[in-house]
Structure formats: structure tokens, C-alpha cells
Image (cartoon, rainbow, N blue to C red; front, side, top):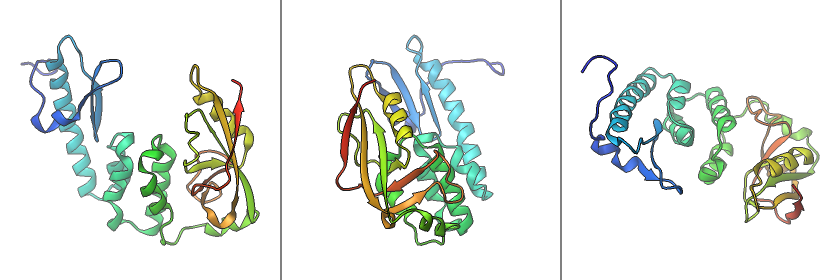
Length: 224
């Protein structure tokens, strides 16, 4: 085999558990360090490419961890696995590194619901957080909003906003064909807010706040 030539081979045995079939019947591969489609006409060519990609990613990940390059280590992982990777580094981090890295993962995340309890624990950490006093600039009670198209309303979500228009934009963005967009709202006490974009490093969306599941959520149907 010449350099750069694609050949066929079996998938590494320890990677077989990462194969799955999506709702359309297509084969996929999802590993903490790499995700890919499987070429159905010749899956063993896909396996060759995946084996090489995993070998490279494992080497990069190990090098980053061994050298204490924590940001690089976390971001060698695919998006869905970055919070567990962050947890791998906890015992090595200063307070500043903890909040900077946690904010980086939060800002990049699209699967916060998947690790909800872990997020609550990490964001509620007793570690001294720079700028925490900024939360005291909020009123003692605020109205928060969340836009969704989920059938259950996703009132258990962590991410809310103080801006109704932002929540409305998200509701319409995520609404799918035949599914009604919903705008949720609730009043929460300032002491129940565990994160705000007023804090250093956390700036994913303007006026975003993180609060435990609010009580008394009202739901408004939005016409898309």
C-alpha cells in the first residue's frame, strides 16, 4: 500500500460498540474523539479511515493530557463528549482555569440536557468564581424566558434568557414542520440563578441566565 492509499480493513474490535444506525437506516460511527458516516457500498473502506482517524486523535489527546494542555485535551473530543473530558481534568485546574474551561465547554455545547445534573453540580461549585458579585446587580426577582419546540415544553431546561425576543427567536428556530413553537416564562428569585452572562468567560447569548427548574411556568403558543 502506498502512502495515502485507501484500503479496506475491519474496524478495530474496541470500536465496534461505537457503530449505530440512525432513524433513516444509515450506518454511523460515534466515538468520544471522532464521528463519521459509513460508506454503505464499501463499509470496510470507512473502517480503514476511521481506524486511522482514531489513532491520530488518541495520540493528540494523550499528548495534550500528558503535557497539561487542558483546553487542547478537552477540544480533541467531539462536542457531545467535551463535558466528560472537562471532568477528567478537574483535579489539575486552578480556579481561573476551572471557570475559563467550563465556560468554553458551556458556550460550545448543544447537548446540555444530556448532562443536566453534571452541569448543575459544576456550575454550583464552591470554587471562588471571578465576578460572582455581578449577580447582585440583578433585581431580587426577574422574569425569565425560554423558547422551545419540544413536545414536553422543555421546562426542565437550564438555559433561560431575560430577553423575551431572544426566547421567541429560539422557539421559531427550533420549531419543526407540524410542531408548534412555545414560549415559556417564569418568575425566579435572584438567589436561584447560578449563572449569568454578566459573569466573566460566560457569554454564549446576551442576557442568558441559568437557573434550576423554575416553578409556575406559563406556556404561550407561538404561530410560526
